[in-house]
Length: 58
Image 1: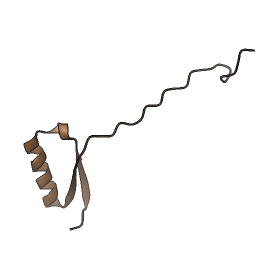
Image 2: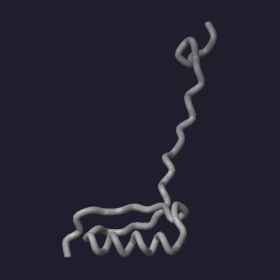
Image 3: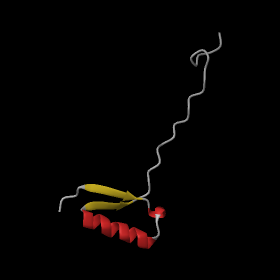
Image 4: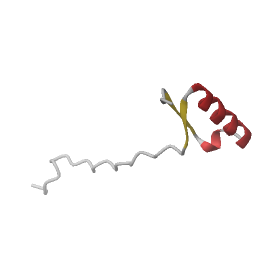
């Protein structure tokens, strides 16, 4: 069977019976079902502001 689409569902988004129903419907439609938590993007801390480009005082 060829997978035409992938369905990602967050596990906390629905109760277990709803998750099983979504999984069954995805299988009948030829979709791949993936129950996973979203990955958080790494947070970059902003560089401190330096009026003279980060150099030493004149």
